[in-house]
Length: 308
Image (cartoon, rainbow, N blue to C red):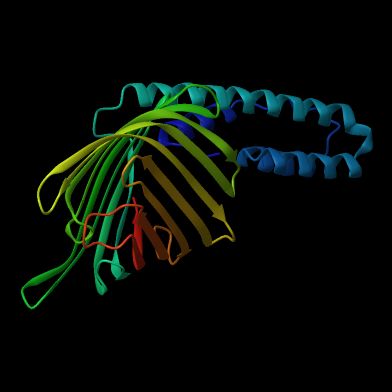
């Protein structure tokens, strides 16, 4: 269980209440061992110690059952109070509070419309509420040689989510892209729809989203197009080991004219508590790109990640 400072305080306060009234027949060393386990607040540890005590003191089974029941009552009360305080903390938070984030900085190598190596940077911010979640992300890939820009790709997106049930949520998306080497000076996308958390485990998560979209593309050579489209995406994370994880993100804007398909596969390893290294491979395919541009771009990235 992950606690904020408020939840930790409430948890400690509730567990400080007496778990039981000691009886004379339970040996003092056994009572001391049980008290030490209860002080940790770890239910599994308390159960283990009480089961050991039951084995060595079978005549005290009734008292041991009473101790365990009292502990579980106090624990449930502590968790309920902590959850209520956490909700109150979220409701009273200011606009710039309760954000978490991730920054990346590294290098890329690209093939397709431009073949070169340069600098890549990104920033992602997430604000978790009771029913709402807000996500902001931005990425830039840039290279300049001898006064000439040879790579210039920017992306910025904002995505709010509204929780409808334990796994179902509604989403909206506003996104801006710029990639002159793919032939457009600006591409604007608006979308909304439903998402579902297919897998929600400690070591593996998978969510999918789908809905209608509107896209406007402004071309480098002049002119623009506007299209209605359909958006589908998935976000998969798998904790392969304690410090190694695999990520797979994919999205598709399907429309008349040029549809866009993107796949990003990454492998990251923890170096320190908040620092990771990530290797990723991105494929972006436009089915009908502007004249002079090729259909498929790839980017290989190596980055350092800092979580905050």
